[in-house]
Image (cartoon, rainbow, N blue to C red; front, side, top):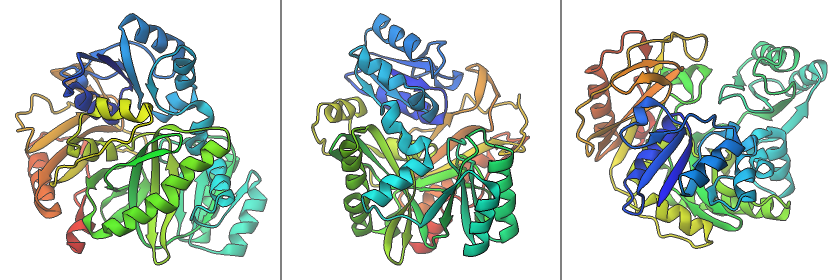
Length: 420
């Protein structure tokens, strides 16, 4: 069969790469894709949010399965168009994607259905929000309500930081996400990402991972879309992961069915493992990026077969490689603020795929002469029997690259090493 991956980032690259490995897949198309994917997919020059054009392309190329990567495409209703046209699509419809598109909607769902999360309040008035901060004190978490490319969250350790973040969101709408804010209590613990393949009440959890959101080592600096990740997170423990599935992912999927917006696709829970058990920091409606790049290569199963099983209401039995995979993002200088473009992108790499992998994100040009066009340019991932061995291999590979003009964190996976 032919498959279509919608999107152009690192998440979409790993999806195309994994789907191309399926013996059931003849051809992978990517719309719009990027030149780093050319070894695994044929690119189609279609915007990821243009549902009508994407559906027409799917019919023309006899696509039997479409996987939607980015949140913007989901909230633009691309899955709605595909469903209307009778096309197989893995991704939630617009109504269900609100679980990511509106943090206030997600928090209300959690409150209504008893899903553990931080206490919160929602404001669209700057003075009223400031009064709430003054009442609650710091630290406090300030979240832009709508999509903000992973950057609309401020963990304010002081009142002044909180007031400045509120001004950004409510007075300036700095993230273009709508002048509405969610203020949350500050949770202490360890963060993990847990995703599941979902179709209504069917929930198939994937392996857990740990993302690194802050731009600098030791979790300093502003939030980004993610500077690296590793999987599995063995020190969290299988019991805690099972508890999160039972108390969070399963009830969230059931809640969406009850609400009349059944969810089909990847339900992503960003979790804080607290003294009281796992609590939701955020829900996303798609594969995490960079989490997908360290989870999907560890999956032994045929991804196309797995997704079709879930769409048919079956529960596939997933099998995972035992090795740890550590992924490090190479970002353009200045990211997540204004960043350099046109940097030379490492390519023609002679990695052993059993050792290391490269997935491209913000790149354009020709496959062998790529230049950077985005903030997060690539992710290099390496395997190892332990977090420490995988991390050492990844950083040894990074040091071999010409990364003038780039920056990257040098501590991806450190927490896993400390806990081993």
